[in-house]
Length: 155
Image (tube, rainbow, N blue to C red; front, side):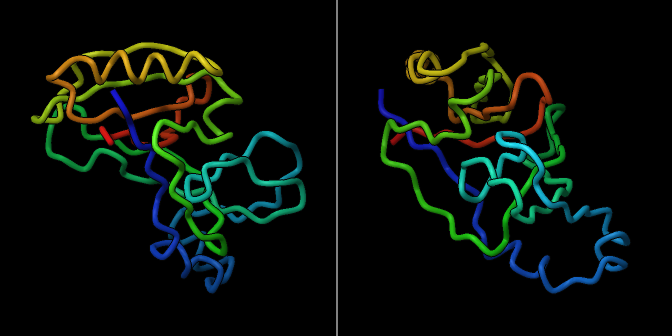
């Protein structure tokens, strides 16, 4: 079973770099300069930001559907960077550097399967989960901090 990891579209975040500190604060968004690597996983580039780069920490609704699993969490983005679609069946660096919670959802947006995987084992966990015909899509979350990392769909 092949899969595709989807980055977030950078265009929806480009306005962030134009906002003042006061405007960011009013929207509960933090502008930060990265001080350690890895540690600021960008959801646009699907890689950790480098030391010295500016990132924005904001709340992102990653499961918008009106279900018991509707969810939002903090994410980092680099609005000045363009998203690049990973190759089919490829895991971007941000997913290989940390333990990942793998959560499978059905067409009604109900979580019907879950697993944990780390490093190269993540590929097998995703493919195994997509082996279940009832799984429509998978959300990947950082297992330790718990924030949304990426969405995987069948390719």
